[in-house]
Structure formats: C-alpha cells, structure tokens
Amino acid sequence: MVVIDDLKALNPIQRAAFFASFLGWALDAFDYFLLAFILKAIATEFHTDVVKVSQAIVFTLVARPFGAFVFGRLADHYGRKPMLMIDVGVYSLLAVASAFAPNLPVLLGLRFLFGFAMGGEWGIGASLALETIPVKSRGVVSGILQQGYPFGYFLAALANLLLPTIGWRGMLMLGVLPGLLILYIRRTVPESPAWQAQRIAGKGTALSFMQAVKGRWPLLLYVVAMMTCFNFFSHGTQDLYPTFLQVQHRFSPALVTACTIALNAGAILGGLFFGALSERIGRRKAIVLAALLALPLIPLWAYSTTPLMLGIGAFLIQFAVQGAWGVVPVHLNELSPEAARGTFPGAAYQIGNLLAAANATVQAGIAEAHGNNYAMALALVCAVVAVLLALVTGFGPEAKGKSFQAAPTSK
View 1: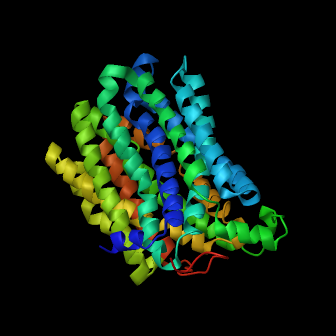
View 2: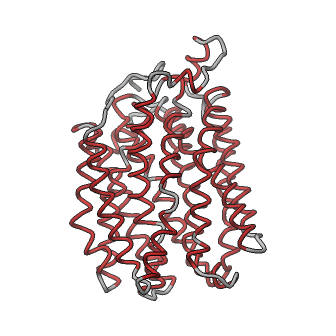
C-alpha cells in the first residue's frame, strides 16, 4: 500500500520521468541478460567453451564506466532528457548488431561498444527521476526504479522460451525493442527541474567533473568500493545462474525460464520492500539488513536439487540481493555533488562494475575446474561479498533526505 500511495502522489510530469527511467533500465537489462541465456549456444556455434564466450559479459562490464562518464558529463551539460534518448538509441542499435557477429572476436567487440552505451543509461535515468519526484517518495521510487533491472531479466527469461525457435542470433535481434522508448521520452518526459535551475543559476555553464568533485575524492573512492561490492553481489548471483541450471542440472529452456522468473519475482519484491524500508530506518541500515539476510539462504539457493526448491531458493536470495540494490539509486544520488549528479552516481556505479567485471569468467573457471560445480562458485562469491557489502556500507556515510536544488518537495 505504501508503494501504491507514493506512486499515486506523483503528478503526471513526475510519473512520466519515473516510467522513462524505469523502462530505460528495464530494457537495458533485457538486452544485457539476453546474452546470459545463450552463452552455451554461442559456444557451440563458434566451437569454443562457455568460459571464452563469457568474456563478452566481461567486455560489456569493462566498457560501462567509460560510457557512464561520457554520457553523464553530456547529460550534466546538455540535459538529462536528450542524452537519455540518444543513449537508448545507441545501445539498442549495438545490441541488434551483435546478432550479426560472424565470429567470437567480433561479438566481443560489439558487446564492448554495447557496454559503453549501456553504461550511460542508469545514471542519467536515475537522476532524471529522482530530481523530479518529491523528497518523501525517494525511497519507494528508488526501490521501484532499481527493479527495472530484474524486470528486464524477467523479460529476457521469457524471451529464452523462443531460443529453440529463433536461435541465439534471433534472441539478440530482440534488442531493437528498447528503441521504441525514445518515442515515449520525446513525447511525455520533461527535462529535470533541478538541472534546469542549475543551468539558469550558472548562466548556461557546467562545472567540469574535476571542479564538481573537488574536495570529495575520498567520498568518490568510498562509493566506488561500495559499488564494487554491490556489483559482485548482483552479477555473482545472476550472470551464470542460467548456465548453472543448464550445465549442472541439465534443465530444459522451460525450466530455466521458470526458475529465472522466480528469481526476478523475488528481486522485484525485495527492491520494493527495502526501498520503502529505507525511508524508515535509513539507507545504510536497509542495505546491511538485506545483505546479511542473503547468508542463511545460500544453501537453499545453490545446493537444492529439485526445480521447486531451486526456484524457492532463487526467489529468496534475490529478495535479499536486489533488496539491497533497491536502495542504491536514492543512496548514490543523495551522496552526489549537485553539479555532477548526472555523472557521479553512474560513474561510481560503473567503475564498481569494471572492478567486478571478471566475475563471470572467474566463476565459470572455478566451476569448470571442479567438474562444472557452479553451485560452489555461486555460493562462494555470494557469501564473501554479502559480508563485505554489509561492512563497507555500515561504516560509510549517508545523506538521507538531502535537498536537490529545485527538486520538488511535494506533489
């Protein structure tokens, strides 16, 4: 009810910004996770192994911080709305181009470029939404916004049902769908009022990133460390999960899809719950609580043997993992310098992604070195990172309720 009430409290302009940000992140994740379902199929066609194909995920993650910085700075200078439209168009085109890769090296190159474009979406979209909505709704809206990611994963899981029919290339061609979002943004989404006010106050100029973060380098380093833990937490429990089901349990595409749907249902509910909870107990406490909740759930999630128990485990572990993530958009935006809110959150997020980029290949290597024991690789990363995330976040700063320049405080 809290979630529904907060959404009802938004006026049409605020809802439009919220939906644009949510759908942008969801369709971004949809394009990204399509690849997670087809690693084995690509390896078979290119006569290689899953470890080598999983480098495509690494290349995508490596490129994302560079895209976050470039698109973020452009958004700080030219506005959130136009750069969000351009970014969505670019990553859609590159996702489709990946479907025509004639060999693995070309695919890796295209996924690197896709990652560059993908890196810009989160920071711009989150800033556009959170600079537009009322302060009192930030926690709830943050929780919903971040769940665009598992919602996109859910859509990719549904698309996986088409794999036997359209093949892995057909799957990647579905990446054209996010391009339709551009029409919605252009017609219904206004520019961020906070950005407009800053531009008027600054007489049309934008501070350089170095000027904007002057005196805040310790904060940037801290946020990068926190986001590195966060990215290991999510990618370490999601990216190789379909491969875990396919290789270790030999599940059919239908069973893989069913378990992944359960995973994303838990993720969405977890994000909503902990995002709203952060308005009551604070951002840090909500993240720590969610991270520690994952620990007792690991055996059920990784070592169950039946589809039912694996599905329940997937639901519960992602309730915790994405529950913690549900607080991230608002937490990062509140910690960000005013003049770099288009750049700072996205850059910190994606640098963390860069530092966690080798996760999929490392996990695949561990699993294959132990007789395709993906359960061990998944459980090990989840347990270690859950503890680290709780510690890093628990001892860090918080700026709950911080005023954004010109951001509305009521509907």
